[in-house]
Structure formats: structure tokens, C-alpha cells
Amino acid sequence: RVLLVKLADRLHDMQSLQYVPREKQLEFARETMDLFAPLASRLGIDWLKRELEDLAFSYLNPEEYEDLSNKIRTSLVDRETYVDEIKALLNQKLTEHGLADFVVLGRPKHLYSIYKKLIAQNIPLEKVYDKVAFRIIVNSVKECYETLGVIHSLWSPIDGRFKDFISTPKGNMYQSLHTSVVGPRGEFMEVQIRTAEMDRIAQEGIAAHWAYKEGKSITDKDARLFKWLKQLVNTLQELEDPRVFLDAVKGELYEAEIFVLTPNGEVKELMRGSTPIDFAFSIHTEVGNRCIGAKINGQIAPLKTTLKNGDLVEILTSPNQTPNPSWINIAQTTRAKNRIKQWLNQEEREKALQVGREVCEKELKKHNLSLKKIIKTGHLKEILKNLYCNSLEELIRKVGTGKITVTAIVKQMQPEEVIEEPPKETVETAVVKEKKKSDQGNVILVEGSDEILTKISHCCMPVPGDDISGFITAGRGISVHKATCPNLLASDPQRRIAVNWAEGIKSTHRAQIQIIAQDQKGLLANLSNTISNDDANIINMEASTSPGGLARFNLIVEINSREHMLRLLQHIRNIDGIIEAKRG
Image (cartoon, rainbow, N blue to C red; front, side):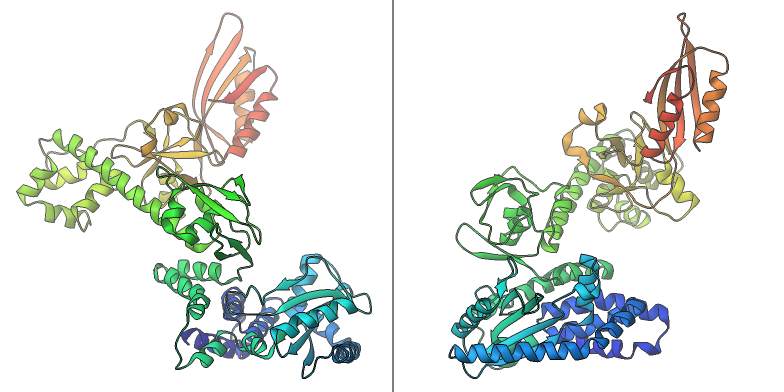
């Protein structure tokens, strides 16, 4: 009922939107198109979905809306004549077949659905033949299929355009037969066939079902019909951030269009584009967490395989398997994505706790301290307060992720004796430098965590565009390496963590270039000019010559991306006398 009230409010807002500023109109229209129209569709209230889409369309694309409206209006008389002809023919043929008390309706498709077809198929309006949809209301399910036979005997059905939503209803309880045929004028014609009760639910959606069930018991079938709504509500309750809430709602609202089977014959409804990972998490979280592959129609298939309608899917599991960060990009449903993120977040918390405890014990020992001693001295409460932690576990975890150093803890105990230690083994990059310059945020995104200190490894110096991975260091945050870095590959896999480059942040990064060239006059000048002309800076240069007349250069340069580096290397190779130029 709350959702229905929200939809009614939104319809009223959209109908009076002409009185608000243009910026607000666009905001409301986009929100309506992305959220409220799909919500109406998911609740099965088709007339409301059409109304909201057309209203939003009129504000989001006013010129296209006006142009399409005018063209549709000019063909109104011909369209009405066409509808009357088809209705008369259908009435005649259905009566001859022995059907009675049926209703044949014809209505023009709403503007936004026609506009979507124009854009998707890149065709003019004249080529959109199915601008009118016909609906036939009969008395029973048996008559629905009889009517379908009459339609297909009159006109040729179009392959792939028949859908039986009677035997397999949609998640919003919608039931109907849909078919498209080649009509009397050679045009595509859509026909929907259903009973009066099906039509009532199609028009009023879940509200019709609620009204019917008012004061009556809920059957097992009803419980299954409402399951999608319960899943949606549960998903939303797990999310606190309103922006994440909106994204999750949008992801759950679009109509699920495929039905796949478990080995036991149970039907699972999934959104189009779903993979075995989505299927696994729809069965149970533990099945999803442990899945290693799938059998689709008896054939072994990878987890990234796109499922199709009617597939028989068996999930293969292993007790040693755990979710992989790459699964987030494979999963399509909000449920699967949320479960994967929850597991990864928990895993990272446990990793950070383990690393933090090891670092604390090791570093505190240098100051003749330990966690037990800190607790016994009674300083813990003050330390937690000063370092903005709610518990000892949170303090240890922040040490493990590099948010808090052990030195900062010791300072609370011995402020006059402790000197901050400089960072080791890594060079700070634009992750920190850019944050000082502006409020653009971090260049590195750590999977499942926020505001963790990240540093670019000095050994391989990755730049945006390189495949990267993180390593949880001993109290110095996340060290970021190229995914192929030998040092990373030799490290403890349990301390590796998924990281990615943030998009849309301009920053500079240091990288190494190794050059071999013929030692000749003007070489250094040409090299410096080429680097400068490519908007790169030389930070450090080491040069040496050999008796054979070869010069070797080891450069540290500042660039902004992998593409920038590749372009720079190509220009360096074009310099006269250069034998080889490559990244270090």
C-alpha cells in the first residue's frame, strides 16, 4: 500500500510538473523514468507505467515528444479505420469458431514505447508497423489457446515473438498469451489474449490481487507470488546509503524475463543477462559462496555464462571455494552482488584484524609494550577516544589497514619519547598528492573498504591503465603493484586484496623507462625535448656509457596513464640513435 501511495503521489507530481523550474523538471522526469515507471510495471499496473513513461518522455526529450505526437495525430483517422477493420474480422472469425461473450479491443501503443522502437531499430515512424496492439478477452484459459489458434490460422505468426505468460506467469502475477503476426497489410501486429480476471490483474496489478485477498487467507501460491516483493524489501533494508538504496531499487525493478530450472524441477525467475552466479545465490547464500562452476543442460559451463530461458542449471560447489572479487562484475542481480560484497567485506575485516594484531605485537614490543599491558594500564579507553575508535578490535583493524600506525598508539602512552617513523619500501604517489591539491578523492579504490591508505609500490610503479593488485602491508596500508609484479606474485596470497583505478581523476604517476642508444652528440637534448613535448617530466636520470659506444639511460618520469606511457615510448623510439626503449 505504501508503494501504491508513492506511485499516486508521483503521478500527481508529474501531471503538475510544468510549474517547477526546468532543472527540477529534468530531475523528476529522470527519476520517474528510472525508478517509478519500472516500479509500476513490477507491480503490474500497466496503465500507470505507460502514463508515467509518456509524461517523463515529454520533459526529457520535449522536441522528440512533440514531433512524434504530431505525426501520430496526423495518422489518427487511418489508424482508427485499421483498428475497426481488424476488430470486425476478429469478431467474425471468433464467432464462426464457436466462441461467445468475448471482447476485442484495439489501442494505440503509448508514445514512449514507439519512440524506443524508433531508436532501437533506427527506423522512421512509417516503418513501425505495430503501432496498435489488440487485446482479446475471453472466458477461460481453454478459450485463450483456442483464440490463439484462430489468430495463427488467419495470419502468419512471427518466429520468436510468441510468449506464454499463462503457463509461466510473470513475477507481478501478470498472465496472458502474446503473439505477433503479419497482418492483412503486411504489417507486424501484436495480439494479447487473456481472461477477464487476467485482464483485471494486468490493468490494476498487485492492487487487484490485494483487493481480492482482503480478509482471506494467503495460500502457498500467494506466498510464492509475493516472494519477489519480500526479496526487494529485504534488499532495501540491508542498505543504509540512500544512493545505494536507489541503485538497488532500480536493479530489482526491471522485469525478470527468464525462467531457469533446478535439477529438482523448481523454476527460478531471474533477470535477463543473469549468470550461474546469480542462479546460485538465488538458491542459497552458501551455495553461491561455494560455487565453482555449473552444468547447463548437462554441459559444464563457466560462471560467466549468460543463462537462457528454459535452461536446466546445476551448480557445482566446493567446500574450499570462496567468493572472488571478479564475481561482482559477473553477477547481474542485486541479491548476488550484495552477498558477494558482504562476504568480501567480512573477509577483509578478518584479514585486517589478523595483520593488525601481528603488527601491534611486533611493533609494540620495540617499546616494551603489548596489547595486554595497554589494557592493564587503563590507557585503552583514552587511546580509543583520541584515535576515534569504538573498540579494541576496531583499533587493531585500523592498524591492519594502515589507517592508524602503532607509533600513534605509543604516542598516547609516551608522547614525549616517540618520533614518527618515515614510511618504508614504497613511494607515495598521486593518491596522496592529488588529495592535497584538490578534493578529487583517491586514485586507488580498495574493494569493500573506504579511506584506506594506499601507496604505489616502488618495485614496479604501476600507472592508470595497468592491471593492479593490492598487498596488505605491516601497518603501512595497501601497497599497490602491477598484477604481474614478481614481488607481488611471491607474496602471501592471503594478504592480497582487490584494488582498482578510480575513474575520472586526473593525476600524475612516476614510472621507470630504460633506454639503450648509440652514444652520439645531441642525444640527451633530443631525449629531453621529446619527453617534454609529450607533457611528461623527468624526475631522475641515471646515464652510463660502454666502450662499444652504447649509452644506457634509466629514467624516472611523471606521466598520467598507461596510454601516455605507450605514446611516450613510441616517440622515444623514433629518436635517431635509439636502439631500445621500454618500461622498467
